[in-house]
Image (cartoon, rainbow, N blue to C red):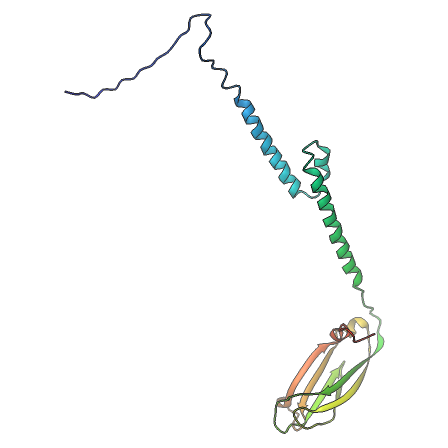
Length: 203
């Protein structure tokens, strides 16, 4: 009959006194420390590169340390010009904005009503009302859906420039037959500043 069995062997060699060992044990641990040193060096160098890329105000510190000379010169000339250009642009924009005076002055606003086109309605007689700074003026009554007015209105205002630009101009077209709320054909509103800032409006 076959019986299962387990055999374990242990072999050992004891050299005689004064003999040189066949397998020198201290040899393998010696190359191990130099292999670990370059790993630490590469990690520290990687951290220094990331710190140089992230930090913006500590540019003088890496220059004093004797690190890799090839990586420092390209980083130094690139960063300063970017900050200088942004600062100059912001100063120019801030200098262009001039504060308006708060002293009231005499101003005259001129509004010219030329014509209207394709007004809705049948047998209407439109009238244009212009209101500026609490003053209201109306055009003459016309007939038809595309009336021609060609009338100019002048509004004298005594306001500060800072408040003048915020004044709204209301232009409303109403049917002269009935001055109820339902008779409003159309209306338009805009500020004085939007008109003043348009090109070719003022000298």
